[in-house]
Image (cartoon, rainbow, N blue to C red; front, side):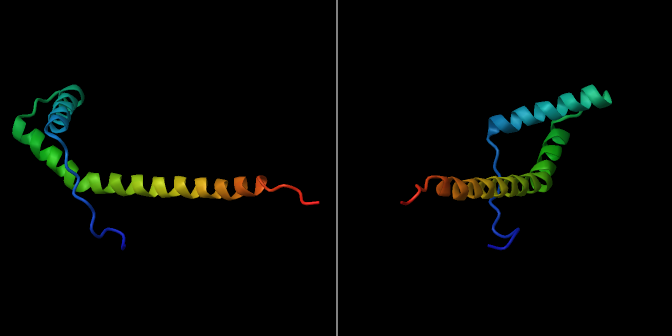
Length: 87
């Protein structure tokens, strides 16, 4: 599969969306001293879903592939440590 093709659409549950909207609202209030409305919260969340989620998803895939490769390297060396000396 080519990189970037057929990426699954990342869908958040309603509960996850509500939690993230509250996090966005709290961030703006704590960091910027601004209150933002529901529309702005939804717009920011949709922006993050569209732009950031694929980047984070791809990074997680790359990290998983790297980890799996290391485990396969370990498997190879572990396999040969099981060999017995032949007489």
